[in-house]
Length: 399
Image (cartoon, rainbow, N blue to C red; front, side, top):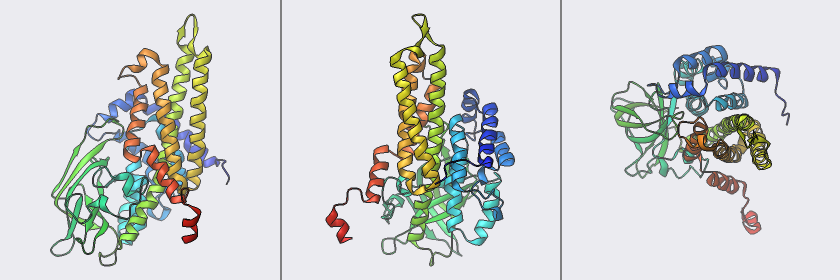
């Protein structure tokens, strides 16, 4: 493994940090999340046109940059530092890999260029609070109960008259679902006898589609409730008779591994920035006639945080190179962000405990990400189960 960054990667990180430093300070973040879209549309277009950010991991034949998911992870470390509210995660890390893996040639050529250019945004709609399960991050996604399981609940799909499909049901926690131009909806079909989970494309103007933005702990991670009332949809991929449950679930699991690596890098960026802001504060804040950063107890706490952040960064970089380790890296990064954000509030003293202080932006991000993609102990438990860590020698021989 060569952990050194290329000149192109360094330049991308430098340029992105420079743009976000000018356009994405704490005040700008708070203003952007309170807009209808939940993000700064002008900044999103700038990032798409100047850096090709949404299309970093899209093949060049579809108008993308043609880089690897590792480059997307490095870019997301910078967006994490600024807590950038944007549709980048939902579009580039979740929707694009699924369309690339499952879409027909016509679907790929019709959707990927617009997604890569930032003209379209997309969101993955999974029923209930089951995104981490659907992506196989905290459990096995093969049973399919998370998508409805052939019973009431979730999202159900049935063939429509004259071709096409009709969806009905609800997804309650759809990341960036209120503003996405395109929804990828995981729905159950086939009833009890031929139970399958398939993915469907739903346009923002589809009849019967109702979306409402939800109140969330972290406003930089906007979520929506998506309701489908006999909504027309297009199957993602080949004809339903040829579409297999295994292909969809495997694609979701592969997307989950890559998304975990991207999320880990993003969390590391946020944790590193929270630590940097705290170090700057303790250098300036004086007590008993000296900066509080000179006190040994404070130094020890900051040193511990530095170790947490650096260990998480190493894990995130390794997962960017080998996404199979994405789950463990995400657990390490989310834990580092939670600990660092909590300590940042403590070390800022009384002002840090005010809800309006910038330190709470990092704390909210840590809590919200763990609710969406964790919790940490389940990420680690599933990774251990997949690696056979708790398998007895007799079970290994039987296998």
